[in-house]
Length: 236
Length: 142
Image (cartoon, rainbow over all chains, first blue to last red; front, side, top):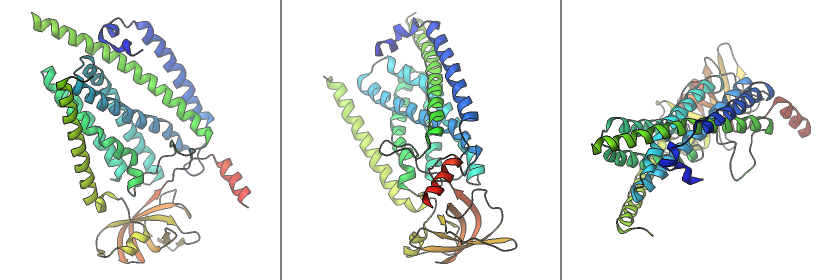
């Protein structure tokens, strides 16, 4: 399965796979939105604003997961110097960054009716902003450093340092007093979210992961083509 | 398995990561007072050098039956079940502010037991339930 991500394979990636993913995306998102907007109940105190959570939580999860993958890929990249790894993590960054933005904006929209404020500089919210800055840094280095090898090195180091921010985001709500509530879904204990709300959350997560895959594959293909074209240009 | 150069780079990276982790930990340790968003009543009770004319935040649960409304102001008690602080406040109250729920008050301490708030935030907990479930839970508790 992993072989499919090798540059030569990605070039022959047919539009059929993307098209079938697109069909899945529409189906899952349709089901997810119907479930989260109509079928699922309102919350006992938050009322209907709980529905923001069905977008907020999956995008937060994906934004962390994406940066985690980029960070670990960057370690492998610096140690083993495998050619296609930087292309992969470079392609993952913009969509991960977008999900971070979605997470912050939806969180803010939820905060106003729930907490009574759009924004608070508590540990969870601040560390999410730091994640966003790391995404920006990572993307801008690829954009503005013209030498591939140099951009590769600098961006990898940024991603590796940013990796340390991930446990801080995850555990900020346990380590410090924060305005943000602790996680409802943990590995160690039963979720404190009712199953009628857990189901749409999981469907929405699945839909967003499919979206992430589509954008990533398209970008990865473009980046690979660009990389090969540059190689040919430099040879001439 | 690892080539000589790859091994060197791996060791260097591990060192870099460890060093940054320790640095971050030390920064967090020294900034703890600033990172916490609010203090609990017990933390204020136990604090030695307390500053009374500085804006701080106190957080906890609104004690049951403690809200008393006067003309423009509201008084209530923030509790963490060990210590309590009386809060007086006038202004907009968030919708989710209610007895037995989490609250964060921003303002100034007059003394260790009395707090004048300028802003009130409701703190939500990690429980999500449909209203019918809450009713069922209340019934089974009675």
